[in-house]
Image (cartoon, rainbow, N blue to C red; front, side):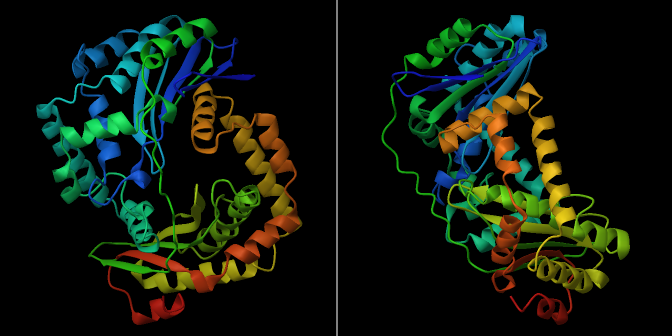
Length: 417
């Protein structure tokens, strides 16, 4: 059972004991992400995440890596649009050492000017790596198109232009404003001592003051768009999307069931039609992207330029058919898949601590596994069909394409976006 302790300075500590394991997973979830950035500072949250690994006043980057390896521990971090996460895993007997390393990086990064310039080059290379992957670019282009009036449309990594403007001052402001304890959740799951974890959290975060009051302006406005990036390559990468639901919507679970019927599994209509029956694509996937103020329903595939038009026609035909409803067999199968994915995922301490940290930070509440299962079990076929009728309004369709130039008839096939 999860326990929550809130410090006077606003830090939230979540703890869940798992005495049958011999390890512990922990991490820090911080309300700092690209959704809270202006265009001028785009990428600063991700930059700050990188700089945490460059050393503290007490330890160099090399010492941090060697000390964590010496105890067989694991650590990493990532930046999302609505938060930044630093996480670790270690044997129970090494929790104090591992926590001290990771918490020191988060609370006392050195931010050396020379390291900042070095890491700026590293992130530039990361941007280049993303640009070399059309399957990533087609999605980034889609976000930039449909969310062009919102910070959600900007890349998490930032741009080369915005990165050049980021210096020590900008990073220190992020650390002071966004990394204040009232915007941090520390979570742990596994075999650990409750008193020890609370003491560690107090040691590194208890003496910090609340940060300045911030208004996180994360409004999201969907704008229908068509983004084309022509280049010479073997395949045409296609991403179609429609407005989805926000992460707090009570209809999110029915949408998740619908997603599995649509293209989120190998038994889905799109996979069976495009790959198994027609042989048009090696893979086709659908997915839901849900943020606090909105979301998307996305479909992504890559096909030869000659079959791109037919592929899109088949996708749209499938969505139109789904508007009339899913079958009882499809509904039952998808709901069981959703339940199985939840249960099997939650058997990992890393997954459990991630679920705890994210949901407490963004939603202010952590549902138990039983509560989540109850929500899925309560989903009805009528709710799924209602969501399908609402979401699959093709007059709101947007498209992103990366690949060779296509015939004008392709755009007629998608409704002349």
